[in-house]
Figure 1 (cartoon, rainbow, N blue to C red):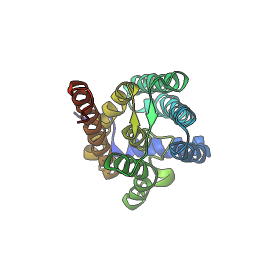
Figure 2: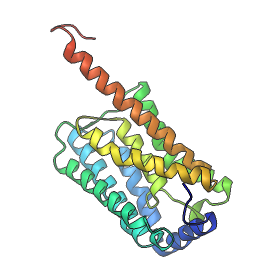
Figure 3: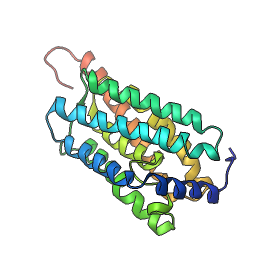
Length: 224
């Protein structure tokens, strides 16, 4: 697949975008840290805070970035904006009606993976961008740009449990495949974290489904 824009044009959009929205990047970071802290709150409070934060971030990315700036060089950007807004609606709905949705952080591989992915999106991603010469205001920034925000979202979904998680994961996984094109075709290596994070989420979803099936098929009183 050939992209309809050059790497230079792509990064110039981010420069223009970051200047135009400043200091929204700081607010995005604060919201991300609030969501991270909420992982350790009580079930209902923590879930609602995290879901509302994600709804705000995905709305901003959809309207602020895709619709108002990325659409200048990519005719598909309005469709990306619509997907982001649909994802934001799902997050908001899960905040209002969380049902069995939980955010569980424990000393195990799943939580370690999720927290590592979160750390990558918030901290490692921008550091790699700096080394590559398009960090900070010259490239994608957490909370206001799609790729680091999606990585952060995937990290939160890895530690989430409940029926909502599968539905909340579809668009982030889809975007990780789209973002992979940026990593390979535009030499943005930090975006390689997207498919890796997505693979970890898919593995988590499959493992959870298999565990649920084993639990249902086990005789009463026997824990698999």
